[in-house]
Image 1 (tube, rainbow, N blue to C red):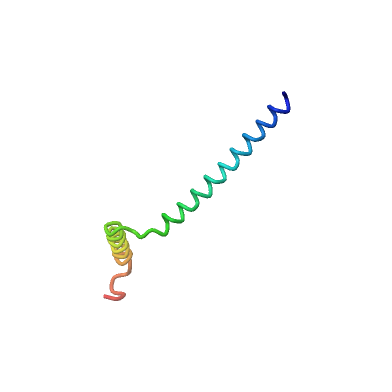
Image 2 (cartoon, rainbow, N blue to C red):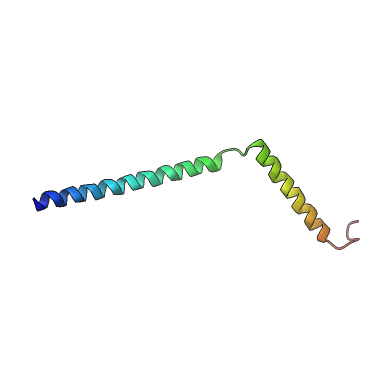
Length: 68
């Protein structure tokens, strides 16, 4: 009886481990898929505007008369 219970427990642990590995690999694939996905139109527009504002901020920090 003890062998049976031990074998059952080992099998459960093995299945749990394999399920965890499968889930991890699936999540990794989905992450790569999300990273490769194109950015939406409005998100891209918003990011470009942020970059433009950042550049303007840096330009305002320059010495006056350097390129003016």
